[in-house]
Length: 153
Image 1 (spheres, rainbow, N blue to C red):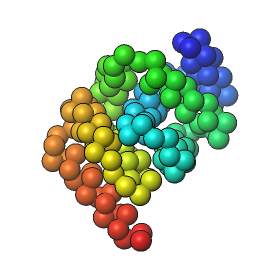
Image 2 (image 1 turned 135 degrees about the vertical axis):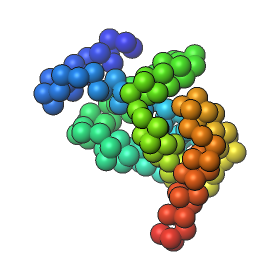
Image 3 (image 1 turned 180 degrees about the horizontal axis):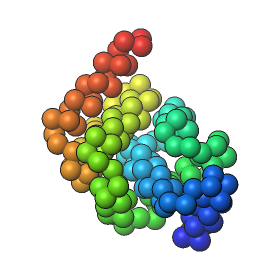
């Protein structure tokens, strides 16, 4: 598995001309987002489509790379014992506003299927705590997403 991830990032770095270890951060971000998708033990196609759209929008990767990143992130989440490797990298590289934005993206994923599962809310709360995002910002992110969704209906 580690070899597959290294090959993916090597191809991505070579094709994009990047020399920073940025894609590792992309994998960590995608893995935490995958945690929200799988929190309710249902693999809803709307949530997977929302995840794919988020990764396309937020990272400079093409569609094939995003599909591969999603597959790798899902496998990493399945194989991981805990979230430490993902959380520690994100805390190290993302500032507070970026971590809060990540929590907002998690809320979008949780609502992508039209309903919020208590398991999804619990998972986001736990990840927000691990990412050191304050409770007020955790709630504000949820309310912003709810407001956005109610305006689009």
